[in-house]
Image 1 (cartoon, rainbow, N blue to C red):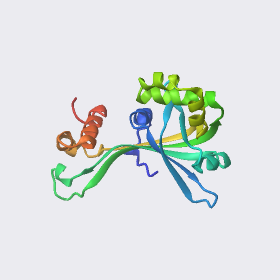
Image 2: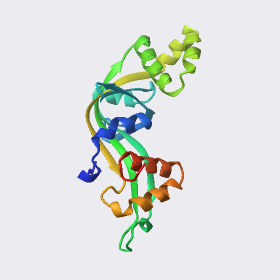
Image 3: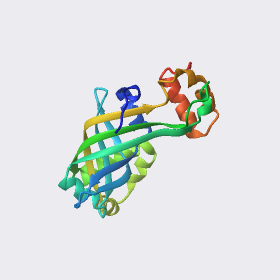
Image 4: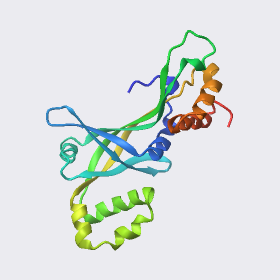
Length: 205
C-alpha cells in the first residue's frame, strides 16, 4: 500500500490485528482476478513478533482451492477510521481528509488437515471471542462436531511481511488538540481514534 514515512508504524501491527481481527483475505482466482474472503483471524505471536494467522473458511468456498494452488496471499486489517474536517486547522487553506489504521500482511498458506488440527484452531478462536462457549463445544456429540469440522477448511497463514499504516495527521501538530477534542465527542470510531492519538503521544493522556 502507499505508505508515506510519517504514517509508517510497524510497531503497532500486532495491536491492530489483535484488536480488529476481522480481516480480508485476498488471493487470485484461476483467471488472475482478485478473490476476497472476509473472516476473523487469530494472531500467533512468538517473542513479541507476529508470526502467523489462523483461520478457516467454508469447504464450499473456492478460496481454499486458490490458497492450495497459489499459497501466497494478502491479508488486510482495518482499524478505526473516520472523517476529519479541515475545521481542526488554525488556518483556512486546508482540505478534508480521512484518518485510519490499517495493516497489510503478505502471507503463505498451509492447510490444517484432520479433525484434531481443526479443533485446536477453533478452540483458540473461541478463547479469544467467547471462552464460555468452549465447554458447550466440548460437550457436543462427536457425530455432530465431525460434520461441522468436515464443513470447513482450516489454514495457517505464515506472515512473510507486514506493512502498518497509522494515518492520524501526525505531521500536523497544530491540529492535534482540536482534532482530539472533536474525535473524543464523536461515535465509536472517532473515540477509538482519539485513544490512538493518546497512545501515539500526540496529545496528553
